[in-house]
Image 1 (cartoon, protein in one colour):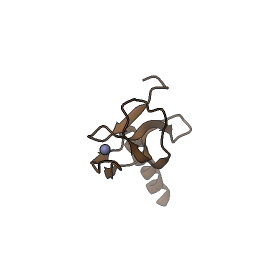
Image 2: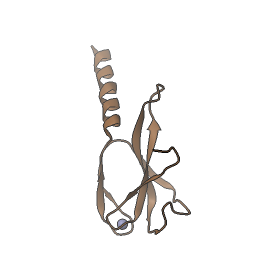
Image 3: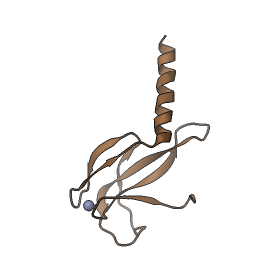
Amino acid sequence: MPANERRFWLCRNGHIMGEIKKISLRPDGGQVSALMLYENSLACEAIPPAELPPLRQKLIGNALEIKCTLCEQRRDWFIGEDAFEHLMATRAKMNASRV
Ligand SMILES: [Zn+2]
């Protein structure tokens, strides 16, 4: 996937609810998918839209029933496998330091 390609996250009615971005959590360059949720959904025929709304939330973990602000359709966001592995690794490290 080219670095400049944008992946938008749409509700079932085609409103743009947010954007999926790869973000780095680790200094070694490991990346996870994060959902950048917009303040307001966009009803837009053109992708990418000319103007993007401000961000409401950055989601890395699972988020259920995110509501489209235009039509109230709900959609679930599931954590990417890469992010899941990162969380598990972090948790294992925390457990190990507790002993
Ligand atoms: Zn919608």
